[in-house]
Amino acid sequence: MEQEMHYGSDYKFIPTTSIGSGIGIQVLPDIYCYTVQIVNIVFVGNPGTDDFVLVDAGMPDSADEIISVTEEKFGADKHPKAIILTHGHFDHVGAIIELIDHWQVPVYAHELEIPYLTGQMSYPDPDPTVEGGMVAKISPLFPNEPIHLGNHVKPLPADGSVPYMKGFRWIHTPGHTQGHVSFFREADKALIAGDAFVTVKQDSLYKVLTQEFEINGPPRYLTPDWRASKESVIKLEALKPSVAVTGHGLPISGEILSTSLEKLAREFDSIAVPDYGKYIN
Image 1 (cartoon, rainbow, N blue to C red):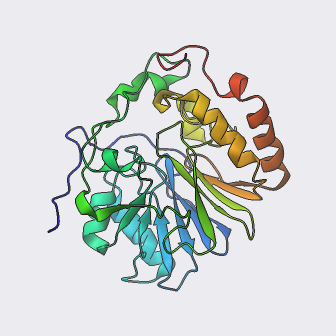
Image 2: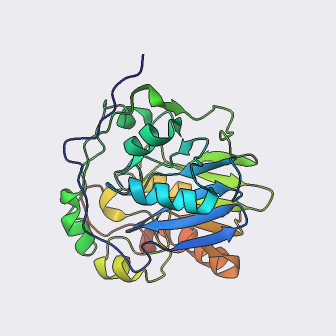
Image 3: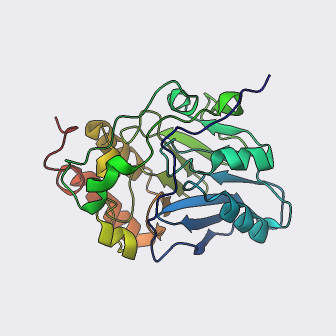
């Protein structure tokens, strides 16, 4: 029997957007990054086919936009085989219930994220005291109560494979959340990093709005475990990705990716970790 799905009572539209909102980038022939307000969703699969998935599910109240983009990219009445989540923060699952209802597709996430996606646990509260800009200060206004996807969400396979994402494997990259994952394809070294690292300083309102490039660690106001975050960045840098799509900011590739990611891994404590905040040991 299917369980009724619902968002937390604090879920609401967030009136924040960036100059990149509504813009899509064809990163590779089968990887398309699209920005919903301030966050990226990723389509993996070849246009014009039924064989594709959606990675992450955008901001609250963005379902109609995501459905429209999907049909524009893949064809009328087309839908993904599944929705694959890097993690369950509000800006990555904001439209997921409407999308499940519309498409009738399964959702996959790391087993450690499942309690946050089935109403059992809330994420740690955002930290407005953390060193950072205006976004950090207003972070308590963001939705944080757990959503409930019932039996629509399933754990990713234990063997590291990703359903319907042939050639990709999931990599556990905790820190931002306990069950955060990234996706890597060895054949062309393509990386979908989620919020393990991002390419915009996400706690600065000005940089979020302008999408000024700056490779950085995960958003400071929603990251409770900086030691694990550092280890995750080091793990991803060791893969030597050729192209990376992150949860926030522009896709990055080539030498600028390799040099920037190597620097972030080497100098993570000074670049990414805030000087103060309630989650700083």
